[in-house]
Image (cartoon, rainbow, N blue to C red):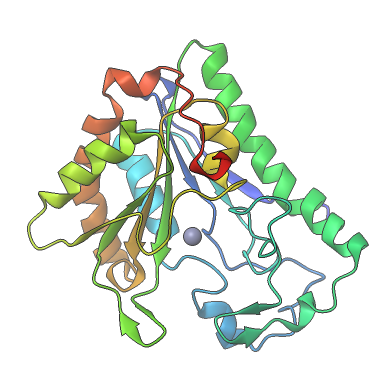
Length: 261
Ligand SMILES: [Zn+2]
């Protein structure tokens, strides 16, 4: 593993706004010596490698709102930061019909190398930023930005925008309400996935610490181009600013996880 590869990037911002943005699947970068994990280069342009457009949306929101953000800088094909360490899909050998040769077979030593070299440093950085907020007596709300494919198993997804959440409604509830008021936008509530996933990023950092949080999914065909992503930033930023500022989002409240029940 190259010593100069940093598995995360921090976008600086004002802590006083009480909001942290995260982007787990920002990049399709596979650092050396992994090559392309044995895949043809075109596979790395697909959603299996990263969330298309999510980094542009996250950067746009961070700039517009003046808040800090952290993104993982490695492809989820190497190791998926939005999974628990013991999740069977942490390092995928098969994803959406594509076999990932560099992940099969995978030795225990290699699994550990990726966990310690990429996954854990990213999560430690997230933890550090939350700790920094708390040290300044600011309880942050956290929003993770993802993008979803426009089709799955041959079917078009009807939602332009989705909010995924587990059991803490403080951020998700008002976001859903505001998003549903956007003209012509079909909003998914825990679609196309359920936001309750043990060990994922929201669970590790927010559910476990009682921080208000939500995960936003935007359909990738809507944010693939920079100008379109910028338009969504303009639409979402004022809503996120207003909702995240609600005082109830800056209190530690342990709602637990539905995965514990
Ligand atoms: Zn994602």
